Amino acid sequence: MSCGSGWYNHEGSWLTDLDIPYSYIRGYVERLEKGETIERSLDGIEKERDEIVAEYRQMIQTEDDNKAFDDAYNTIRTIYRYAEDHLFWVEHWFHTIWYKKIRQIGSVLVANGMINEVNDIFMFNRYEIPQLLTEVATAWALGVDIPVRGEYYKSRAAKRRKILTAAAEWNPTPALGVPPEEVAEPFTIMLWGITTDRVKEWLKGVDTTAGADLSEIKGFASSAGVAEGPARVLKMLRDIVDLQPGEILVCPSTNPSWAPVFTNIKAAVTDIGGLTSHAAIVCREYGVPSVTGCGIATAAIKTGDIVKVDGDTGVVTIVERAS
Image (cartoon, rainbow, N blue to C red; front, side, top):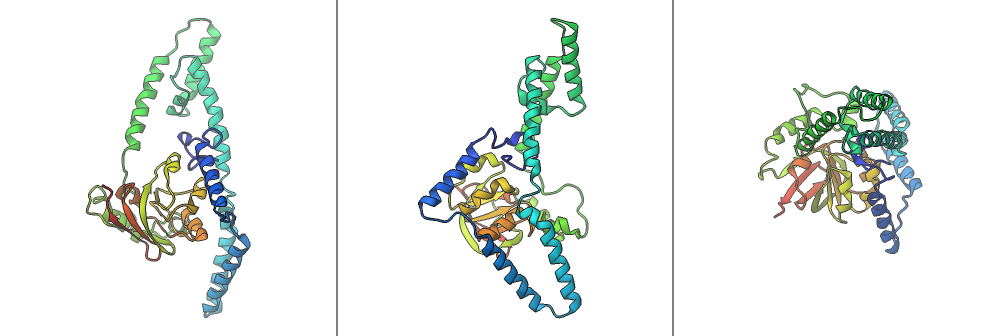
């Protein structure tokens, strides 16, 4: 399992970074010692789902609408079981193996003086890596003390690391380019939480996120309930070990490697995500209030701010700024 989204080498994995899985295990043990039940009743969840579906069916007036409802419901049940069971997160496994293998190649480049650190190999693109390997192989084939362009590659890696460091400290706008007049694509709306209204809200909030005047953020009402508490802004999963019980999780988005934290938080707020995003689904299952698709939450809210999350209306209020 990746320590993040599964897409980036710098996130690491549970294979080498044990802080995250051990912190989860510790949390489970603490709850068990308190007499809590940590297993969810899947049968109970399925029963509740079937009851809700039956109630909706009773509200439908026509056969055509009933067919449309059943078609949509059957499609969702076919597709989203992969999300519920995390069956499509195979890239976590694949990328963990892939990055491990690439680091082995990186160690060869370090040993031959081409780069300074193993992870510097990720500073080069797929066209440059063959050049690096060709130089190493050619130098080895020609004999001892054959000059290679190690200093050239080291300087390129160092320059690119500076660029990445600067990018990591930047709070980007929620989207780039000119937004369409209307967002209508279902996947974009339901999974990513990007709608015409949301884009308008993002655009209004972009200019105010740097100031102290912003006190309210809007998003999707993704999981019912209201909660208030100190915010913990997490942009990288490796910082999740700092999350304290009773805090409000504020993050760009969540994925299966975040799942165990939902038993400790009061509420969740995300920049990205619609009604069927990971954060929305898990929060509903655990009964945790959630507002998703806020766009600017991680830029507008700071760790320690007291925030109120209204999962019924989709409004996040910054009650008090951290001193």
